[in-house]
Length: 377
Image (spheres, rainbow, N blue to C red):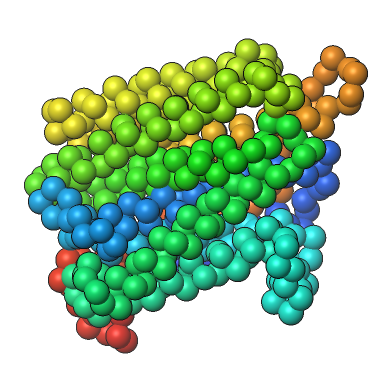
């Protein structure tokens, strides 16, 4: 069985970049330039940021979680974050007109005033630090000890880069005058709250599925992640609510009005509010009170999918309205083409393949130490 899973994951790891490369060769130019590929790499970046913020509860602040579940599964959490940052990088390159030339220019002619240039640097720094943290934890055998040690120094740097990456990414949109719905500092806090939701939900689902036969670990995972998902969702609702209220008094209502009560209202109220808030909070609360791991996993699936929709809506819908022809009662609707769908599918294949490969090949269990080539089982 293990050999079969290895073969499947290797095939997926090869197929994912191949789909991205093929999609790149046939992609078209849209009137809405920041489409599904931008949504994809933003989403994966938030997954990484959210997962590492959760990890920092142990690695920086020393909280081990119920039954030491956070400490015992720390390496799984780090690998989950690494698995998400790599497809984010691939999709960023695929979104450039000339990926290799663009990558070279970022290195040799860095523009300090450009937020997008800084994204490439922060992505790279975070990926390198996460790999270093994982190797340190693998060599240590347990988690990265929360003391005045190298592990703590790495963890603090990761948390700092996390916040910088998410807030800088948010303000790439938040400083875009052409799209009134984005303008403002609210984008940074929305991105950070949304990152915790998607990072925690993805991490909870990953660990729960892998530890399915370990009932005690499932119980502790449920106790740890359920309140995080409830609190992060409530924080996101609070921030989003004030964003919408503030938009009512500004030009941002041009697009927020269509999202709340216009062309995109169905998606907002059904997907974001009903599924992503009401049902998700009810399920997470039930999971916590009843210690029901099935309810937690269902909550995690819902929030992971809803988070992708939230990123899509925040990026695409505001552009659709802002870029519509002035003075005409119409909206410039956006439909992803086959190339974009292939590329985003390739990104998810890479993400899932890396998760599976790392789980199979790396000693991610608590106090499990490498036996081959310094880092492998």
